[in-house]
Length: 155
Ligand SMILES: [Fe+2]
Ligand SMILES: [Fe+2]
Image (cartoon, rainbow, N blue to C red):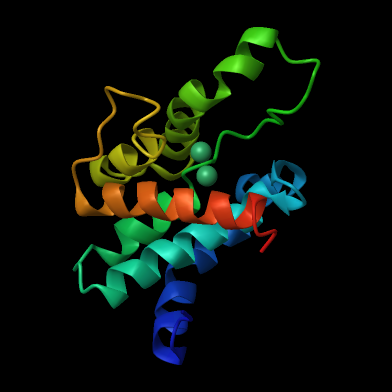
């Protein structure tokens, strides 16, 4: 499944400004899974979420969907770093959505739909943060598809 030329252009029109930001570029320096950086993983998730939306005619808000997917792991630290407090290492799965949301709010002033999508992307691990908007559900599903591809299939 690939984006059409028109979809790719629409995708690029949304991500362009964000990708220029130095803090978004910092995600290149952190590893997500295997050899995949957090930035590569985030772009994969954004593309996959957008593809799912287009393929199944979900009708999400394009900007909310792509921006929240691109920033869903915008936590800006290396969670593999052994120098980090052991609790943070263990709790990363639970705590990073909140940290990513906080950074995205501070730096980009993201709206409520985008905040929810970022905060809920680890559901069902984060039991009480249940995705409600269609954008949140798509980001949550796309993240799992990409994590699986990147770890198991080394995509
Ligand atoms: Fe995440
Ligand atoms: Fe992720």
